Amino acid sequence: MLALRAGARIAVIAEEWHNAFCVVTRGRVQLELRDGEPGPVLGHDAAFWLRGTGVRALHNPYRRTAKVRIITPPGSRALTE
Image (tube, rainbow, N blue to C red; front, side, top):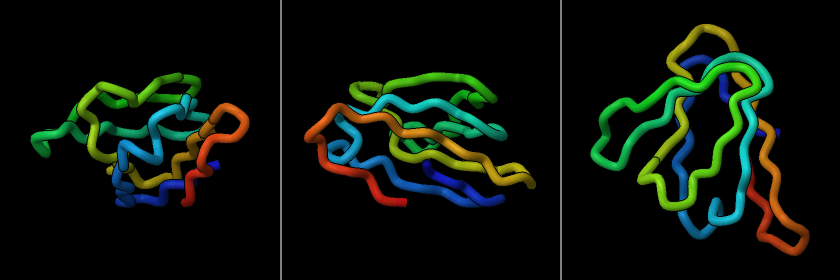
């Protein structure tokens, strides 16, 4: 489970996130696009892949902590918080 506190940003490193499927379980997360522009905001129960999307970071510009469940296939490299 990835917890993004208010104002937190985590880089999406393609090699680490390649097979990750993500679900927002609390709060809202904004995707930061490759060019640094803000992307869509995903709310509770939004599910998404990051492979091939050009997303370079997950950002929480809101006041409440957001949580994202990261699901990877068995044997995949684990993601760290």
